[in-house]
Amino acid sequence: MYSIANEPESAAEGAREFLEELAQYAKSLDPTRPVLYTSHRHLADRALGVGDVIALNMYYGWYSYSGDIEAGVRAAAEVLREVRRRFPEKPILITEFGADAIYGLHHDPPVVWSEEYQAAFLRRYIEELSGEVAGMFIWNFADFRTPQGRRGPLRPIYNRKGIFTRDRQPKASAPAVAELYKRLSRRG
Image (cartoon, rainbow, N blue to C red; front, side, top):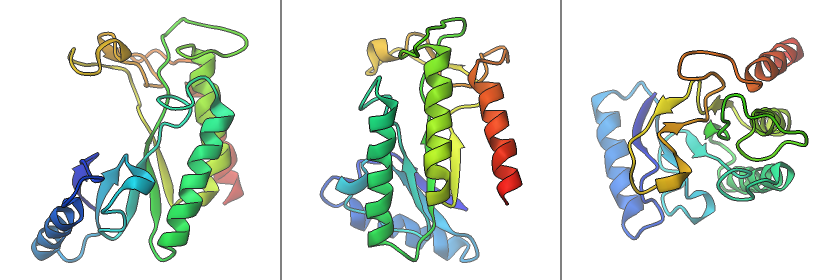
């Protein structure tokens, strides 16, 4: 599969034409591989449907509906239903989903930035949305360092959406995800 863009400004004027041209160019180089770009604009995306696969980065319950996982999952499900209605013939992937967790921060009930919130977020997304899509990709395997910049205080030194720390210590979400994947694999 070839990805021609990740989170481009696809709600902008001219985005569709630009991404169509990129998709055609990629196909001219190798017509055997599916082409996609990853959208974070969802229903406002003017180019949605360009390519062979629809790829969506979804963070409802983190960047929007922060602290309300159930509202976030409902919002994500509504987007998926509408995308499926518009493009019934195309496979849909959730190419990123996740919530940050600071290793060692525990709270009951789960609150944002806690390991429990991250585990609950991933659990609910996988339970509720995996049957609606061709595939889902957790963002991210492990925490990683990020530059300071426009996201400012949202990313203090690290992107902490990993289910493992930067030095590969498991967070509470790691065993939760492993158990979910085992259950899903038995479903067939």
